[in-house]
Length: 209
Ligand code: MD3
Ligand code: FE
Image (cartoon, rainbow, N blue to C red; front, top):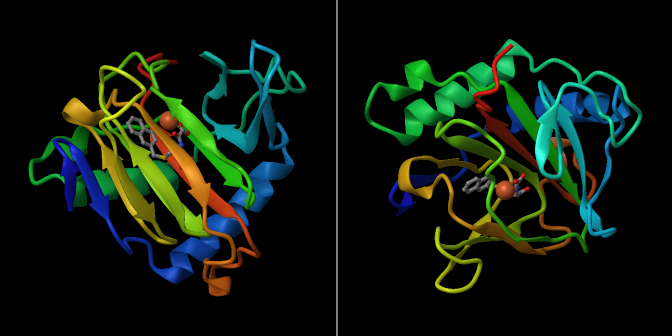
Protein backbone atom coordinates (compact mmCIF):
# COMPACT_ATOMS: atom_id res chain seq x y z
CA UNK A 1 0.00 0.00 0.00
CA UNK A 2 1.68 3.24 -1.14
CA UNK A 3 0.83 5.84 1.53
CA UNK A 4 2.82 8.60 -0.19
CA UNK A 5 5.33 8.56 -3.07
CA UNK A 6 8.06 6.11 -2.03
CA UNK A 7 6.37 5.25 1.30
CA UNK A 8 5.07 1.69 1.11
CA UNK A 9 3.20 -0.07 3.94
CA UNK A 10 3.39 -3.88 3.88
CA UNK A 11 0.79 -5.03 6.47
CA UNK A 12 1.44 -8.44 8.03
CA UNK A 13 4.76 -8.83 6.20
CA UNK A 14 6.56 -10.74 8.97
CA UNK A 15 5.28 -14.23 9.84
CA UNK A 16 4.77 -14.75 13.60
CA UNK A 17 7.68 -17.23 13.67
CA UNK A 18 10.00 -14.57 12.24
CA UNK A 19 8.66 -12.01 14.74
CA UNK A 20 9.50 -14.43 17.56
CA UNK A 21 13.05 -14.79 16.30
CA UNK A 22 13.44 -11.03 16.11
CA UNK A 23 12.08 -10.58 19.65
CA UNK A 24 14.56 -13.15 20.96
CA UNK A 25 17.44 -11.53 19.07
CA UNK A 26 16.46 -8.05 20.34
CA UNK A 27 16.47 -9.37 23.93
CA UNK A 28 20.10 -10.40 23.45
CA UNK A 29 21.12 -7.15 21.74
CA UNK A 30 19.44 -5.19 24.54
CA UNK A 31 21.85 -6.78 27.06
CA UNK A 32 24.99 -5.52 25.43
CA UNK A 33 27.75 -4.77 24.59
CA UNK A 34 25.85 -1.48 24.71
CA UNK A 35 22.75 -1.88 26.89
CA UNK A 36 19.41 -0.67 25.60
CA UNK A 37 18.78 2.69 27.25
CA UNK A 38 16.85 5.97 27.11
CA UNK A 39 18.84 8.28 24.82
CA UNK A 40 19.84 11.57 26.43
CA UNK A 41 19.36 14.63 24.25
CA UNK A 42 21.76 17.60 24.14
CA UNK A 43 18.92 19.73 25.55
CA UNK A 44 19.04 17.69 28.76
CA UNK A 45 15.84 15.82 27.94
CA UNK A 46 15.58 12.05 27.87
CA UNK A 47 13.68 10.12 25.21
CA UNK A 48 10.80 7.98 26.52
CA UNK A 49 11.74 5.29 23.99
CA UNK A 50 14.61 2.88 24.80
CA UNK A 51 17.10 2.20 21.99
CA UNK A 52 19.94 -0.15 21.10
CA UNK A 53 21.90 0.04 17.84
CA UNK A 54 23.71 -2.41 15.56
CA UNK A 55 26.41 -1.58 13.03
CA UNK A 56 26.57 2.11 13.88
CA UNK A 57 25.58 3.70 17.19
CA UNK A 58 23.21 6.62 16.87
CA UNK A 59 23.55 9.45 19.31
CA UNK A 60 21.89 12.76 18.80
CA UNK A 61 22.69 13.76 16.13
CA UNK A 62 25.47 11.65 14.62
CA UNK A 63 26.62 8.05 14.16
CA UNK A 64 29.67 6.58 15.88
CA UNK A 65 31.27 3.13 16.20
CA UNK A 66 31.47 3.34 19.99
CA UNK A 67 28.71 4.30 22.41
CA UNK A 68 30.43 7.41 23.80
CA UNK A 69 27.21 8.55 25.45
CA UNK A 70 26.51 5.19 27.19
CA UNK A 71 29.44 2.97 28.21
CA UNK A 72 32.04 3.59 25.51
CA UNK A 73 31.75 0.04 24.17
CA UNK A 74 31.99 -0.75 20.45
CA UNK A 75 28.57 -1.28 18.91
CA UNK A 76 27.56 -4.86 17.97
CA UNK A 77 27.74 -5.86 14.31
CA UNK A 78 24.68 -5.82 12.06
CA UNK A 79 24.13 -9.47 11.08
CA UNK A 80 23.92 -10.28 7.38
CA UNK A 81 20.56 -12.02 7.86
CA UNK A 82 19.03 -8.78 9.13
CA UNK A 83 20.41 -6.78 6.19
CA UNK A 84 19.02 -9.47 3.88
CA UNK A 85 15.59 -9.18 5.55
CA UNK A 86 15.70 -5.43 4.81
CA UNK A 87 16.61 -6.12 1.19
CA UNK A 88 13.60 -8.42 0.86
CA UNK A 89 11.30 -5.73 2.28
CA UNK A 90 12.61 -3.19 -0.25
CA UNK A 91 12.19 -5.73 -3.07
CA UNK A 92 8.59 -6.37 -2.01
CA UNK A 93 7.81 -2.66 -1.66
CA UNK A 94 9.16 -1.50 -5.03
CA UNK A 95 8.72 -3.05 -8.45
CA UNK A 96 12.11 -2.07 -9.80
CA UNK A 97 15.42 -3.87 -9.18
CA UNK A 98 16.94 -1.19 -6.90
CA UNK A 99 16.66 -3.51 -3.88
CA UNK A 100 19.66 -5.43 -5.21
CA UNK A 101 21.79 -2.43 -4.30
CA UNK A 102 20.24 -1.91 -0.87
CA UNK A 103 22.99 -2.56 1.67
CA UNK A 104 21.95 -1.36 5.15
CA UNK A 105 24.82 -1.01 7.63
CA UNK A 106 22.93 0.20 10.74
CA UNK A 107 19.86 -0.84 12.70
CA UNK A 108 18.13 1.15 15.42
CA UNK A 109 15.95 -0.94 17.70
CA UNK A 110 13.39 1.04 19.69
CA UNK A 111 11.30 -0.28 22.56
CA UNK A 112 8.11 1.58 23.49
CA UNK A 113 6.36 0.91 26.77
CA UNK A 114 2.68 1.86 26.88
CA UNK A 115 3.47 5.51 27.60
CA UNK A 116 6.39 6.04 25.25
CA UNK A 117 6.15 8.41 22.28
CA UNK A 118 8.41 9.79 19.62
CA UNK A 119 8.03 13.41 18.56
CA UNK A 120 8.01 14.56 14.96
CA UNK A 121 11.51 14.51 13.48
CA UNK A 122 13.50 13.83 10.32
CA UNK A 123 16.22 11.18 10.04
CA UNK A 124 19.04 13.19 8.53
CA UNK A 125 22.22 11.71 9.95
CA UNK A 126 22.60 9.30 7.03
CA UNK A 127 24.79 10.48 4.14
CA UNK A 128 22.79 8.47 1.65
CA UNK A 129 19.28 8.61 0.12
CA UNK A 130 18.71 4.81 0.38
CA UNK A 131 15.36 3.79 1.93
CA UNK A 132 14.72 3.17 5.61
CA UNK A 133 12.97 -0.13 6.42
CA UNK A 134 10.82 -0.27 9.57
CA UNK A 135 9.62 -3.52 11.19
CA UNK A 136 6.98 -3.39 13.96
CA UNK A 137 6.41 -6.07 16.61
CA UNK A 138 4.10 -6.08 19.64
CA UNK A 139 1.57 -3.41 20.51
CA UNK A 140 -0.15 -1.45 17.75
CA UNK A 141 0.93 2.18 17.44
CA UNK A 142 -0.22 5.31 15.71
CA UNK A 143 2.51 6.27 13.25
CA UNK A 144 2.32 9.90 12.06
CA UNK A 145 3.69 10.48 8.59
CA UNK A 146 4.18 14.15 7.78
CA UNK A 147 5.71 16.25 5.03
CA UNK A 148 9.28 17.21 4.14
CA UNK A 149 8.91 20.94 4.79
CA UNK A 150 7.74 21.27 8.41
CA UNK A 151 7.05 19.16 11.47
CA UNK A 152 3.46 20.39 11.37
CA UNK A 153 0.40 19.44 9.33
CA UNK A 154 -0.39 18.10 6.84
CA UNK A 155 0.24 14.55 8.09
CA UNK A 156 -1.42 11.16 7.90
CA UNK A 157 -1.92 8.85 10.85
CA UNK A 158 -1.41 5.15 10.08
CA UNK A 159 -1.77 2.26 12.52
CA UNK A 160 1.21 -0.05 12.54
CA UNK A 161 0.48 -3.57 13.78
CA UNK A 162 2.73 -6.39 14.85
CA UNK A 163 4.33 -7.87 11.74
CA UNK A 164 3.96 -4.79 9.57
CA UNK A 165 6.86 -3.57 7.45
CA UNK A 166 7.17 -0.04 6.08
CA UNK A 167 9.65 1.17 3.50
CA UNK A 168 10.46 4.88 3.26
CA UNK A 169 12.35 5.78 0.12
CA UNK A 170 12.40 8.31 -2.68
CA UNK A 171 10.56 11.54 -1.89
CA UNK A 172 9.45 10.15 1.50
CA UNK A 173 12.93 9.45 2.83
CA UNK A 174 13.32 12.83 4.53
CA UNK A 175 9.72 13.37 5.62
CA UNK A 176 8.93 14.29 9.22
CA UNK A 177 7.46 11.41 11.21
CA UNK A 178 6.72 10.33 14.76
CA UNK A 179 4.84 7.95 17.03
CA UNK A 180 2.22 9.84 19.07
CA UNK A 181 0.52 6.81 20.66
CA UNK A 182 0.86 3.17 21.67
CA UNK A 183 -2.33 1.10 22.02
CA UNK A 184 -1.52 -0.97 25.13
CA UNK A 185 -2.04 -4.72 25.20
CA UNK A 186 -2.85 -5.03 21.51
CA UNK A 187 0.11 -7.21 20.56
CA UNK A 188 0.10 -10.95 19.86
CA UNK A 189 1.61 -12.86 22.83
CA UNK A 190 2.70 -15.56 20.36
CA UNK A 191 5.51 -13.20 19.28
CA UNK A 192 7.05 -13.42 22.74
CA UNK A 193 6.36 -9.75 23.46
CA UNK A 194 4.76 -9.21 26.85
CA UNK A 195 3.49 -5.67 26.44
CA UNK A 196 5.06 -2.78 24.60
CA UNK A 197 6.22 -2.31 21.04
CA UNK A 198 9.48 -3.04 19.28
CA UNK A 199 10.47 -1.21 16.13
CA UNK A 200 13.54 -2.11 14.10
CA UNK A 201 14.72 0.34 11.47
CA UNK A 202 17.38 -0.54 8.91
CA UNK A 203 19.45 2.25 7.40
CA UNK A 204 22.28 2.70 4.95
CA UNK A 205 24.43 5.40 6.54
CA UNK A 206 26.75 6.11 3.62
CA UNK A 207 29.57 6.50 6.17
CA UNK A 208 31.68 3.57 4.92
CA UNK A 209 34.22 1.26 6.66
C1 MD3 B 1 10.11 7.93 7.54
N1 MD3 B 1 11.26 5.27 14.58
O1 MD3 B 1 13.95 5.35 14.76
S1 MD3 B 1 9.62 3.85 12.31
C2 MD3 B 1 13.38 6.30 14.21
O2 MD3 B 1 8.41 3.44 15.22
C3 MD3 B 1 11.91 6.33 14.12
O3 MD3 B 1 10.28 3.62 16.28
C4 MD3 B 1 9.84 5.21 14.63
O4 MD3 B 1 11.37 7.27 13.68
C5 MD3 B 1 9.48 3.99 15.42
O5 MD3 B 1 13.98 7.25 13.70
C6 MD3 B 1 9.20 5.22 13.31
C7 MD3 B 1 9.20 4.50 10.79
C8 MD3 B 1 10.21 5.41 10.17
C9 MD3 B 1 11.56 5.34 10.42
C10 MD3 B 1 12.43 6.14 9.72
C11 MD3 B 1 11.95 7.02 8.74
C12 MD3 B 1 9.75 6.28 9.23
C13 MD3 B 1 10.59 7.07 8.52
C14 MD3 B 1 12.81 7.83 7.98
C15 MD3 B 1 12.30 8.65 7.02
C16 MD3 B 1 10.96 8.70 6.80
FE1 FE C 1 12.83 8.46 12.59
